[in-house]
Image 1 (tube, one colour):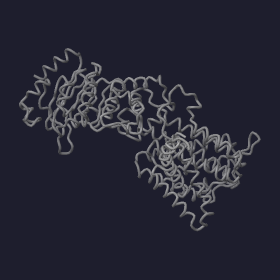
Image 2: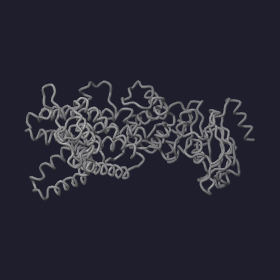
Image 3: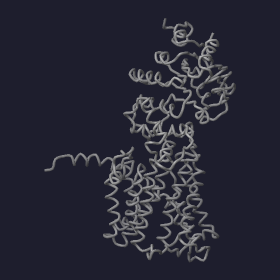
Length: 261
Length: 341
């Protein structure tokens, strides 16, 4: 059933952004990922759900190159990226955010985004100060608006609230020309208002940018995704539309503790 | 003076406003200082503070912006000083190629920058206390090597009879010219670091200090940026080394000993690592203490007094004199807002 759905999506968008074939990752005797095969179309927005330790973040790390998979192949827009270092994947347009914000506490918000834009450009080194008309600075300003941080342009990152730091984390992933983004629990620790903001930011992303979002908050996950993959004990356990997943009795048993429905 | 790290200036400001009132007052005071200072105060306090301020600045650049605390900055300065002795003239009857100053100085500073980059390249794979340890090991090894090598370093007596150049009809070793020479190079280094802190490279270095993993993931070559910062710090330390050897007229292993290495660290820590003015404030305090403590408590206890003053400063303000100023300034501002009597 899932394969045919994916095939339908492929016809409508023309290409796969990510193809995983039998991806596995072992840490010694611990099997963190096993036999993950996924097809994600360009521009698709997918949620990956699962309880703690299900292997969701390990899956992200394998895709971004933070850890290399023990077995299996990963293709990004048709190109085999299994053995590429993280920054090469970033240059090809694959981005991620981190579950725990990985920011530059001593820099201002704008400068952080500027450096992220600069990192994927050709000229990364300069002894001069960037001008306001610098291509990367202009792009940084527009990303600032996209993540609703324009009021904190010159604020030191260390003094931002947790929610604002999460927004900046998304901003860093939007730098350059992302084609696909992996969001690792972007809503963790956010207030209800900040969650609404986050849903608005994600839904306002340009349509050609696909993403996978790991999210514990079903309310957020199901509002920002078109398709859902469930993971359990390092395996893909079920895939379907948000409605199918929400209604599935097995999913409720494992993920929701059988309390819903 | 604005000691907070500036976060962008509005384009409407003219250059005087952008310079800031603090910088202008300080510049005028430093330029006029020779009018009131004796020769002793001009060189032993003024010149020395500026030279040691530059050494502290080279450490501040690495530690404040790059998160790398080095104990080898005096070693780097020493390499420039030895290079001046070897490439130029000395009266120790060893080497002394007799190059003119305008050829010897660029080569000496280049040698310092390369040595610094090499030390950096060796130590960037370490972090925190291990960087301190490895640079201390390099500084100590260089000290003992200089002491035991006669072919290049002329052993423990080193080189003497090195003369500061005389050109444009000025003998640059004379107190007033030497003070202005130190001031010129110190201001140049300070301005370069201040400008550089907001340059793309400066921001990159600070981001690497805060989160090297993320910077690597963003596509930056972390090691190359760190090593380049070491080379830049080497240029500043090298210039300070040239001034030092011109002023002293001699260089020996004692110049680059562990005592001197620790002095540079104390200057940077006492002054504060958050802004490039910090090391210069620290240098003034340390040079004044080292010069006058002996008059206050006598020859036997003066180191105790110096140590206590440092302890008090660090105890009251972990950010050094800069941090102290940061705490006093808001109170002063409040005071000036109150209506007069």
